[in-house]
Image (cartoon, rainbow, N blue to C red; front, side, top):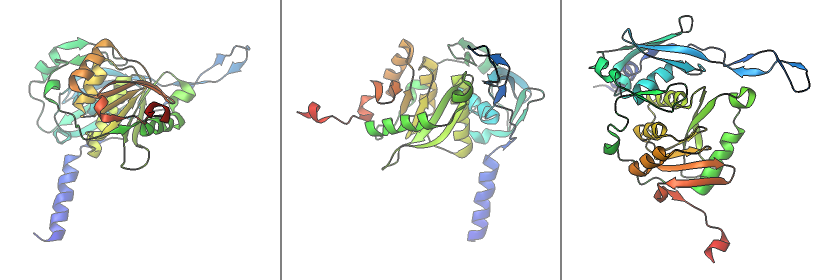
Length: 295
């Protein structure tokens, strides 16, 4: 086959694998009237929040309360992390309409056993979501995270400083959680690929999962950062996304810790400034020992 036709064929295949999506956006913050501690009238910014009902092939699945930063990616990531879809190639189109507060996902061939898959729900501690379909631990034991990737202490501190300096909705309005996906290059500090904020930490995770699918980003050597606590569902989602490193400025739950140990993910909590707690997966973390500790 001539090289020109080969390039055209590959381009056509890549285009077909990526769904048609809208770019629906809504204001992320709003100004409202308030009175401060000195009795002065002020106009502070507050975070946006709106319901977004997800439909798959015209079947209603769930309503998510969201900031609306990446609604299409949120829908895709939700279906990915709920294990309702296996690949981005199954999706034909994603259409968000804020007037009807809905997102319609159209698949190429439908989802087999959709009613059965969505029939059983597990109530979780998730904010902005709160339920997960199916068995929380399904397929987790079969996932093997990469063992040949390493995060060193200096890179962790550089990551935390990059996140601290990032201009966020939280700094201006509060009331949101943030998540980031970073890659650790062979030399230099980690490079931020995505940063997403939402009213619920699970929404932010799902939006990044959706962006990864859309952009064909592999998670097997990436670092995931979240401002939220590390519950069982957060750890499960990180493992499903094949992420070897999970970092949070917050704490964790007993079940989150148990699942992290079970899966071997490198989990770091209470990470801020030059402080952190390394809980699991110590074999992937290199600590720089101070001279006094080497003596």
